[in-house]
Length: 575
Image (cartoon, rainbow, N blue to C red; front, top):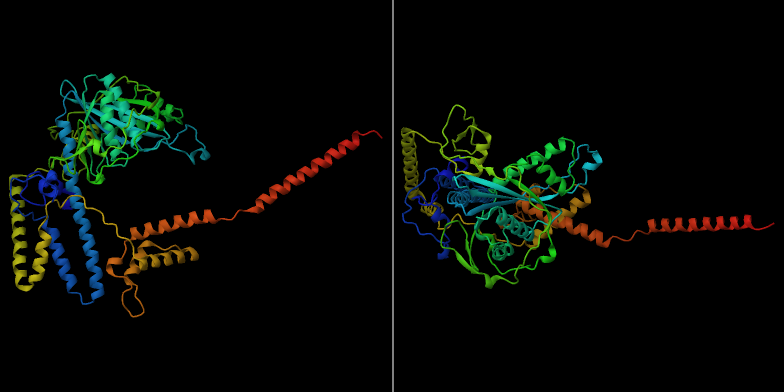
């Protein structure tokens, strides 16, 4: 519960605790360009973070007391994997807070000549009919639409936004479609907002955004549109909810209202008509477009380590890359060293261009310094945040744009909590000292678990280990038995069976490092199923029975025609 609610409020750039210090946790252990030196020591101990270490110590001590070696080995492996997942979750929370700081700082430092564009693909919209038969519902193909919310600071200092919606219909959602949309948006912004000179981009980690080809195409887009793309920041996976989701919900609501009024939405043009119907959606513009694949001249690049890059800055012909926001000076990537072919004008086909609605921009409410009043009935849903708001709209804008505030406590409660943490820390240290006299080996192991290494919260490189031939043969045999009997094997049961299976001498058939998780077994079975289907299609013999029936009917029809012609000729001949 601590990791889910309070931990995110404890982390910061400068903290005396290794578990809370962003600079220490996200600095690369070997690359000095991705390191941030701390100006403080890390001697503080967080009692709540040490709970995990205490559980780790107590759990493995209890496992060591189990006399059955096989059971102890299995429990130790299970506990190790579970604790590793908790540690990964803790690192994910810390990375999320750091990446969110990039969004907060961009909004706070936004100048009148700058824009922050947040991009996302909306879920495909299925054609909707006012009177729809059951047969019309099945087999539908959705229409793709890409939403970009451009947030800017007005002259009065308030934040406002314009939403640009590209309706593609059927399209491959790849980097070239995104690049085409970005170029079209910047050209439209140049016309509608001539004072804009710089743009900051932000999106989630989808493959169409987190792509080297898209990054390399930004230089040409900036030159052709006259608006400089300064930065590109990505959100942490599973933490990409943005202002786009709110605008998508508004537009979907407008589409449902349009259909309920007796209209149909079956084409991209109908979607645009529905969204722009009446006064439209505040600040939302729609364009019906098609991607011209003939203009795609860039197909590959030479950038390495893309999965670890989360922040980019574009300086002339160079790209500065960071693994974590504001950690280090960044790695400079020379564009000429990684570019294989230049991407020219994307040439997006405009079937129906943007049209400014009656209310051509939306206003983002001022959500700072919100005071609790009797009318503040909307509470923030984030655990630990005590903000309250008088309207649902302001609540949504707080969730999407503002920092969450930890619940405030009185001075007396704060002292009590601090005293409790000190007592827990001293108790934990006392347990370690007592353990020295009992088992020195256990102390060495536990102390190594407590001490964190620099960069402990960075993404870990995945290790892809090939299955041994013994494991593959076993899975093939289990899969084949399921195919023949009709009772498909359940991955969870197969995983348990691998742990308990023994050979003729009573020894375990598989070593602990060969045990597989249910997800791994499920993936392996899926590949076997696809391969079996492909083989069946390839080796399927031609069915001649149906062909023979067709030929037979043709022959019979020809015979009937010849008999009919002969009878006609006989009747027409003179007697």
